Image 1 (cartoon, rainbow, N blue to C red):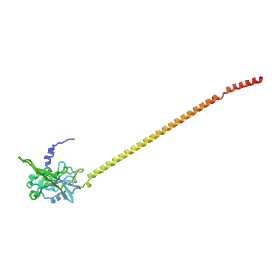
Image 2 (cartoon, rainbow, N blue to C red):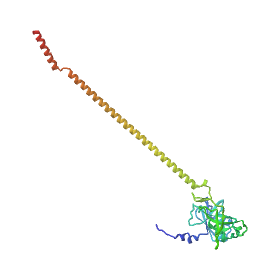
Image 3 (cartoon, rainbow, N blue to C red):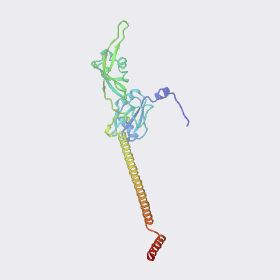
Image 4 (cartoon, rainbow, N blue to C red):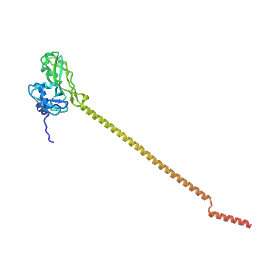
Length: 306
């Protein structure tokens, strides 16, 4: 098939920059009519610039802003209610997939006891940059009205382990480095479920997890059936082998019995023949009987003449 190739740096860079102020509104159920979404949006949000709201599918709409402050203000809400349904907000990405949520979210990071002179954007954003992308400070931090703690909103990757502290050091030209460990606390970090790549839903009601569970159950049942069939087949083959051996043994026994019987008959016949032969030898023949009678008659005649 024909192919078109872009440089990855362009695809995720200058090309994606055209949509950097786009938000995806995701509904967990089929969305309301687009006209209702547009009219409700105007009631909920006052914006300085303009926004175009368009349909992607039955669950997703795109909101394309012209003003960055409007974009940030709306995205930081993370969820709004429209027509009784929750519309979850997600920053658009070139890797957007309608059935998946990106594992990124804006959250608040608290920096308790951060040194007061660091409660300025150019400093505090460096402290939290190791955690995620700095977005803004809250109003109290901007106004330096809460010296006990700084509060910064950042965009984090939910697939990564978030650190609970960061080292803040000072480098000297004529002395060893020194510094302190700054504690980090997080507010409002949403759950991201890797098995279905979704945010904010109960695992007990996860359809993806349920489908995977059903598939595993079917696989287990199929495996068990296969094992049972295999065992049944083996048992059948074993029984058939036993039956074959039994039949062969019976056949051999019959042949041996027949051979023994034949041998006995032969032996009996031979014995009878021997007996008959002996009897024949012991009894004189008719010719001998006649000769004996003649000899005895001759002897009797001689006695009479004498």
